[in-house]
Image 1 (cartoon, rainbow, N blue to C red):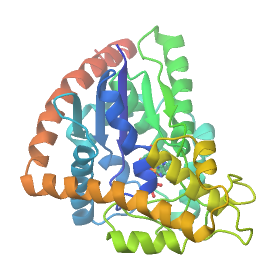
Image 2 (tube, helix red, strand yellow):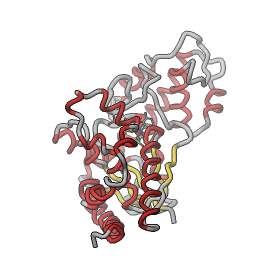
Image 3 (cartoon, protein in one colour):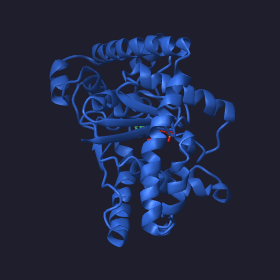
Image 4 (cartoon, helix red, strand yellow):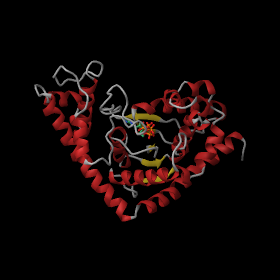
Length: 325
Ligand code: AQP
């Protein structure tokens, strides 16, 4: 049976990019295999964050997991920090990834560039080791991620080869699964840059008021050609909107292109705004209901119990393989 694992960092308010590239796809997996979804709160500490903000983001993220359709009876939802095996496996695996390869990670390069050179935390540099630990603890063979996280799954695969060559078949080889449409949603104001929680420019937040969302879409950057076509290089703004529309309607990009043949940008943007408001309006209602129900903490506690059992098993296997037990 497939083992699926994925997570999201509670670093900020979730964006439409997080929804389309990750959240929206998670519920499909809970019917296919044993699925573990976590709140990557230890990863959130790799950049400065206020403790209260981290706490409320984590609760919000859990409520959005539930609102997106994850069912705690079918999958395991938990906080990363509630399962100490993540940190313990990290302490072992950090010896199996090398500084040269870690310094080549795009995410590290991009995020460290924004920091003062003397204040780049070791955690940011070693992020892929913790992410490898997250994946490997659950023997996950399927890791659903957006485009930007595939490099971290690749380095996990390198680690598995290195470790298993030395100690035998101890770790399970994971594979990244990237959504076909919407793997990289771009900023609405700078469509050559990824829409990202930590970079508010051109973001649509899942909790934004629907009127604000419509306004953001109607003023999204496009081009002067007045032709709806998918061409990310020459028409990044229009292509991004097409991608958003196709992903939320569950159709292919050529199908979406066809629907808007001959439409002007006003009509096109209006249709994109309609579908985004429809999907997010629905999601927001469910999110509010889960927050009001007080169910979130209980789900996380139950999830942590189940996750600990599986994670501790793997940890013992690794500890035994390397000679700690
Ligand atoms: N713009 C995006 N398009 C498609 N997928 C995206 N993801 C993030 N942004 C987009 C996917 O969301 C999941 C959760 O990401 P994460 O929180 O673990 O880290 P991230 O990839 O670094 O996401 P952000 O929003 O850019 O966070 P910050 O700003 O905190 O670094 C992942 O599967 C990711 O691919």
